[in-house]
Amino acid sequence: KNEVEQSPQNLTAQEGEFITINCSYSVGISALHWLQQHPGGGIVSLFMLSSGKKKHGRLIATINIQEKHSSLHITASHPRDSAVYICAPTGNQFYFGTGTSLTVIP
Amino acid sequence: NAGVTQTPKFQVLKTGQSMTLQCAQDMNHEYMSWYRQDPGMGLRLIHYSVGAGITDQGEVPNGYNVSRSTTEDFPLRLLSAAPSQTSVYFCASRGTHQETQYFGPGTRLLVL
Image (tube, rainbow over all chains, first blue to last red; front, side):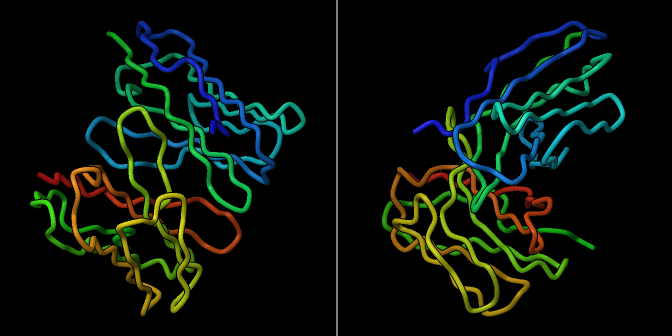
């Protein structure tokens, strides 16, 4: 079962590039979380959103509940953004995508 | 606040051994969960608790037990370790209304 699909699975970008990670889901949700996991590290929540758009620094997350789709954008990417980004739609439970592995090259 | 803590960070077991993975949080969160993370797969829910004295099974509960005697602690017990339980285990907690989940640093388990 694939309630959550993320694309791309892997992404390599040059420093400074604009990055987009997409998430589509099939379950009914009340909110969606974007998580960040650095290599060998723990998991940190970046955003929780239920509609529209949120912005934290260079990160922007959008969600379209009707289309069951969310995107995470990173502007002016930096090597420290290299991590796995996980989409987690939430209804009665948390669902998790398999993650997008991002590498930003200096 | 220490947030969510997990011990140990790394453990090697032989098949058939038992052990307990510890998880504690100091944020007075009602919801606590255990997940396992395997290569190529998303986080999968093992067990969860909505409050002290209340636990329930998640997606992959077989081979694991949990208890929640206090709000702070949520240990995960492996009854008889199997190589299929080699994984990274994450404990997480959150407040009542689907708020942000806070994850522990993870426990890397290798079962030989």
